[in-house]
Image (cartoon, rainbow, N blue to C red; front, side):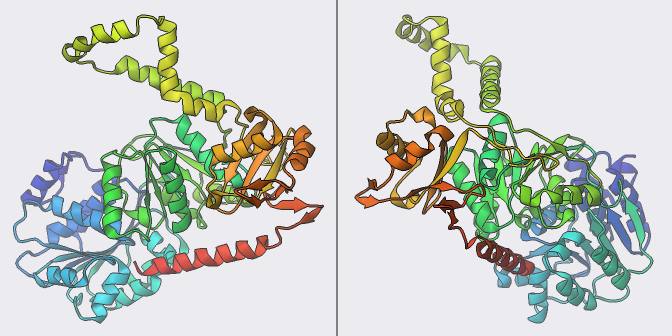
Length: 566
């Protein structure tokens, strides 16, 4: 079927064709004719990236009476980004329809300006639940004449705690209206909303309920908690052409991971609720334009990302809800493409993998992170292909060739190749030269894997003392007379750091670094416990661990509650 065969108004069809759309997706093909020709409720279940916005947007625009300057259509979406995306799509669809106005209302922007859009005669309003409720209470918007209501990403709105707002909004709409609910999954809470506010809805399902997209490869890497960031770096380095998303559980972690990547030269940007709307819009614009390769985001902020050709989704932490994993992984493998969804898993949250497999009906493969040698080989292959495929402006380059050839005449072809590689990859090669393999202490079925050759040490110096990795390495080597290659991984934090050496050197490290000073102040070096804490004299001094974890859980709950009224 073609779009031209659907019962759409000529001006609306003209707008669709101007966007380059010719054939409707399955959810559009099933939804559009029914929503145009019948006054009834509908539940549409389909994965993200299947064209749901057009599935409900085209019928709504088709049925709006442009002669009436009152709100007739209402679309409710969980985040400001998704609101903006839907609104932009509606405006593109209706480009050739005179008199149609679409208003977008969401938190973080001027309420007076949004109110003015509505007063100017908007027939369609796209809104987040929290801001819509605020404007209703202030009598800035009336929805008592609405004929069509869409709940988009209904499952995600409920996950974000918007049920009370949705109830309040729907109670103020007329009984005689059509309610269209679209969702990627159908949890019990969504089913309850459909029973409360919908009458004998038609259900359209593309694929199966609560099932992840079939063209996504799901992989997990089991690592120690302290190695999450290193695992991300290996994934990025092994995929130099990656165009992807990294999902973090909290805004704080999102910013920290993005900052680290930026400092180390990766093409990345953060996207979370603590950024201003301008900062978020700028990050999204750069990501869509592929000016940046990787966007580090929270679940809430990422709900408006409607971008094709995303190659990888990386779960820095797995989400608390299995359904949220479906939304995350659904950012890739759009428009018939293939994609990879990666989960970085510690022993503590290993059980989440089986929960997601059971609920979302997918199968994870356990992967092994690439070694330093494999990463360097992959980077070199990419570099060579870049050289082979580059287009050359012979006229301009030929003017420079004689002087360059003369300057480099003393070098053989092999020497020149080595120097080219050194310029491009010297830092990467040094980083991975003596790197250890990253894996967790436990394998897939709980069998213990340990690195018996290395001992991990704690030192109470970090970034706050002006140290970086090079400074810490020099501090260790200058006081112990050990070569740099004897020291393994270095993990620096603000107030302290960890480093590894061969176990046979443990006594030497403790003895040589005892009673030493840095910047005229003494420091302490101790053997670190297996869980990353520090031990001295057999006594575990990391007694605040459980309390800190509880505080972290409280912070996550507060973050989640704050996100409810976006």
